[in-house]
Image (cartoon, rainbow, N blue to C red; front, top):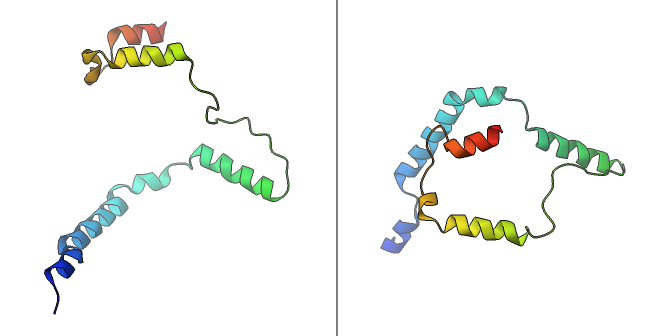
Length: 105
């Protein structure tokens, strides 16, 4: 006899159908993704790993992760900005005019 608890552990029948639908959608609708070139940093990492495996001494000058904390004045400004209610909304679709002008300059 199957308890009600055991029945809850079984996947719902619709889950398989949803999974199958998503897999089909990805295969059919996103076929263009297969034509995209490989992600450049993944390729660089693959090549570095191959060279290191052959014993090459690699000096990596690529992008990395910070090893020091952000300067306090930058963190303070971020906190100040995040505490302003007007920053809690989405920006306009064309961007923020003042920011766009500053970036263009």
